[in-house]
Length: 167
Image 1: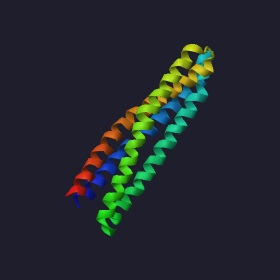
Image 2: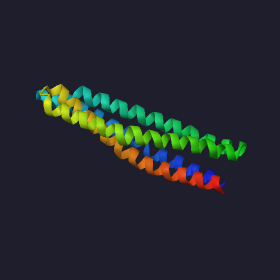
Image 3: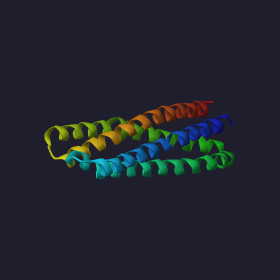
Image 4: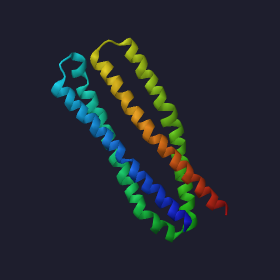
């Protein structure tokens, strides 16, 4: 029963953090609106579409994660009651796969993309390209900030699952 409480606490923490994707996404869309309304220079106008796209992506990511985790919150008690051992095994498998994804995508892939975007900024003078690269970097930094915390939570949850399994 302790592991069910841990699983529920982990999901609730995820449900708290995923709306930050939505908030940052809305912030990017508001910034896009601001550049559209107030932008006078070519560079300011170049940010309109990239910020709108980046904001939309963050909102989609946030909503997808939120509803996915919301369904887990309601399914955890039932799954645990059906078969506690199978629940722990499936959660260990899922958390280890997620940790591997974090290692490969978030902590390796995203920094590589940020470096590539930074190099493009150095060598391209077109305002649209620069605005796009800066917008992508900003979005990836937001993802790194939020997912860095999520990685810590899922790692701790994974350790709790493993300790239950060995008992």
